[in-house]
Amino acid sequence: MVVAATLAAVRDVLVEVPEALLAERRRLGLDGRDEMWEGVVHVVPPAGGPHQRLAFRLGLALGPLAERLGLIASHETGLFRAADDYRVPDLLFCRPEHASERGAEGAELVVEVRSPGDETYAELEFYAAVGVREVLVAHPDDRTVELFRLAGDRMLPVTGDAEGAVRSDVLGVRLLTGDSGLHLSWADGATTV
Image (cartoon, rainbow, N blue to C red; front, side):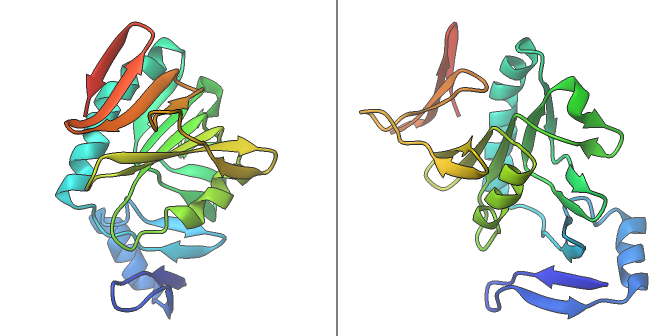
């Protein structure tokens, strides 16, 4: 089995890995964040503290809003195009008909929290191909966000308003980075993460 690994010193290395090693990773539960890109395993290391804390806080804030809209909110859920082609975003919001035993077969919105050297931007093409309406990219160090929206068959960046805020059409949430963190506001509420 071919495995792709991204390391700080070496980028995008393809390594032939014995199936027994991959089976052992599965047995020990170490493969939960691994992804499969058109048949190539991408080993994703555990996220660091700032990454996990921001993903958790975003999930707490956005989950109830998504559920009010009839969407299913989930964390580190496989989004599948095929059995050998899937990604595992930090947060995923899908319609009930997209939920499956293995994860999700489509999504309205995914959230990717950046980690050093990750493949977030390389995943945008995949998300467009499976019809994800929006991708929110969050940066834990400065609490900034980028929003990408599906336009035809591509994910295009959404331009912020005069204050620099972006608005998710999927959740009806406005996101603005300020001195005290990332401010989220919606029709009947607001919070800062």
